[in-house]
Length: 95
Image 1 (cartoon, helix red, strand yellow):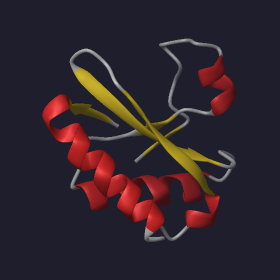
Image 2: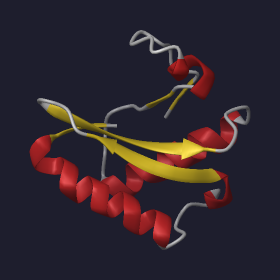
Image 3: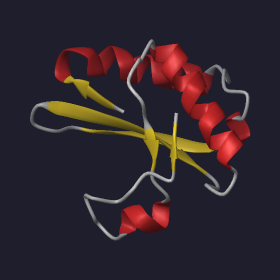
């Protein structure tokens, strides 16, 4: 998810609280989270064990959006695609 700088701290905090508080139905599939500091926007990502189960990935994404009151769609990029450092990597799933 991309956030303007003024919203990223709160969104990062709520993401961590949801992870620590085990609020995700498929929390056992989540490996971690990361925030990337950028010039105008910051990106928060959740890493999952396996991208092959679309229903699980979409469920995690929908819950995350709900926790953060985020209304835009979010995409899931498979790790192998992201490793290619291709900024145009296509989302495998969308929530």
